[in-house]
Each structure stands twice: as C-alpha cells, then as structure tokens.
Image (cartoon, rainbow, N blue to C red; front, side):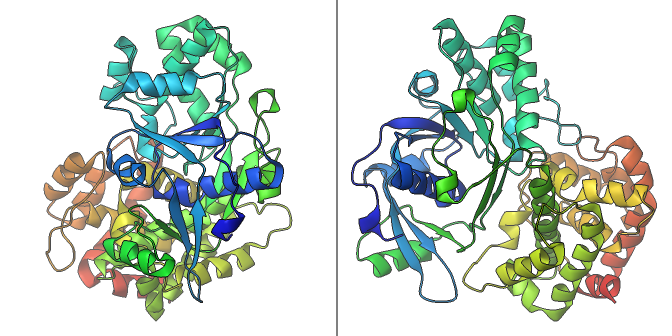
Length: 472
C-alpha cells in the first residue's frame, strides 16, 4: 500500500509485541496497519526486544516508522509502516516492559521469540523447568524469559482487578497457542497456583499459522531502500509479496483489530493450516537449508535452481503430503507448486545458514512429526531421513570441504561434542539420537537404521549426490 494511504494519526497502543524483529515488522505490523485502515481502532504496537537494543536504536531516530519492501518479479514495492509507538529493550528496563504489558489499554500480547524463546522441551512441548531463564524467573519478580514476562504481567493485571490480555503467538510451533498456554500455566502454577487457575479460566491463547518469507536485512538492502524511496531508513524489512495468517478467533472479551478486513483467515481450528505449513514449507525449508548449505549454496533460490535439489524438494513433498490433512478447499499439490515458485524467487535472498539456525528446536515440529507418522503407517521417507542426516553433519561444525561452520543453536556445544566424538557416520547418528530434547526415545529407536543408511551415503558421496539418489 502506498505511504500516502496510511492512517493519518498514530494510534494509541493496544498491542505489545515480544521479540520485535524483521519478521513481525514485515508481517504482523502490516496486517495490523491494514486492519486499522479498514475499520479504525487503537491498535498501535509497543515492540519489545528481549535481547539486543539494535532494533530500538535503528528505529528511534526515525520516529519508529520504517519501510516495508515487497520483492516480487517486478520493481520492488515500498510502503511506510507507522504502527509502532515505541520499542523497549527488556534487559535495560524490565519494569518498563511489565508496565507496558500490564497497561489496561493493552488487550493483546503477540510474540515472535523463535522456538527456543518459549523455554520448553521441543520433543514434548512441556516447560523446561531447568532452563536457566526459567530458574531465574521462578525466584525474581523481574523476569528475563518471554514466559516469565507473560506470567508476571498477568499477575500484575490480576492484582489490579483487570482482565487478562490475549496471548497471540506467531511462532512456528505445532498448536502454538496450546503450547504457550501450557508453558505459561506451568510457570504460573509454580509461582502461585491461584494465578494459574485464573489464567486458565479467563485467559485466551489462540493458535495461529503465519507465513511470509522474510530474509535478514543487509547493508546492501538499506542502501537500495534509500535509492528507491529517496530517504534514509536504518531498519527496512524485505519480504516476498505472499503473506498468509490464519488465527483461531478466540480473544479475551472478543477484543481484537478487524483482522478479517486485513485478509486474516479467522477460523475455529487452525491445526490443518498449521500442519500443512509447518511440514510442507518449514520442513522442506529446513531440509534445503542443511543439504543446500553442505552442497555449497548460499540461498534457497540458489539451491532449487540446481535441478538435483529441485527434484529433491518435490520428493520431500511426496513423502510429506500423505501425513498432511489439507484445509478445506486447498489442494496440497497446488500448494507445493506455489511453494516451489516462492523458493525460486531470485529476489528473495533467504540464506541457508539463516534457516539452519536453532535446528534442535525446529526439527521435532518441522520434520520428525512427519517421520513418526510415516513410520507408523509403514511409509518410507528416504528424503526426510537425508534431511535429518544433513542436520547431523551440519551440527558437527564442518562442511563437506572441511571448512568450519558457525553453528547457532541452544545445544550447539553439546551437539558438536557428540558428533566430534564419533568415528563413523553410524556412531554420529547413534550419539545424536540420544539427545532427548530432540528425539523421543521410541522415535530414536525406529529412526536408527534409516538414518544410519542416509548418513553413510551423505558422508560418502556428499549432499548433492545423496539428494540425487533419493530422488531417482
């Protein structure tokens, strides 16, 4: 949308967003702007950075406004987004963050804190009570974790006689609202059982499915945006034209922006949308990230430009689709072809290394769930097994040419130690299958033989040749 069509006044704050990064600014902020332009309402957003001041520092000098850039086949389309009212940095002033969330005008708290930000066990979805941030939050009023901020702010609202806010997660977790509800209730119960009872009765945690490919912004992007718009912007966001948001319509007191007017799909149950996207998009994205990186490709579009990997991703979809129930009116085959076109968009420089981050948190939701269902149904999954084997080689910390990999993962040191202690691919598979945060014990036993076979071929012939073999 052109900048001159944006809302003319800055709206009052109705939403606090935890984990303000490029994705939510390219996705949620745009939808909220569209909802207010269609139907009004005070749904301005206060963003919270839970770790770094970089986003706050970049946006503050430009009044929290920034440029959203849609990268299609034609000339990039720019739009000025003006829904942010402030950005707080949690480690600098946690009290200010709690005060913002506890403000009675705030009716929704949204989150994009990545899978690891929920301090849960990815294999089970349960709160990890041994996580250092959770141990801190159990004994301190000023929290450091995203669940801690939610619980302490809800505690403040209850003490003040206020209604709770709706917690709207926008992260790629299966049944994400229910996972966050479970984590929040567990933490609250350990602090004050009556608080947990109140949240369970009065709070709302709708599940969502979010989809827009948003690569990290580079210095070259910043220079390009200045050229396109004629004005400097220290924090633009680059994204594909496509966007999809499905949300369960379950909000505290029905207080929400007019999301439907902005194109959001308001549904009774988001599970079908969520599984389709997590498995068919996120699962293949991760598979291409690990195999493509090992094969020497920098981006997803570079990877699928190779006919071997173009065939490989279609093989993956053939393995995934039997384990996916399509949402009403959706053709999974057509969805897969649309995904391929999105992956092949050369304007989207989505780096394989970026997608490969935090694999220990992502694999259970993106790939292992599909593998489990296929195993239970007696279906083989050589392409998916190759993807997991590629992750296992990747976390060892060196690529196929022996060059070091900067592995970013909460379990990076442990995974590297397990991998480096193995003398053969079979030993590496056995060692990494012992990581219970990733592989449930029964699944690990079932996967040992097919993963060992995949790893032995991957180590022997390399990612590209191994991908060609499973796609033949």
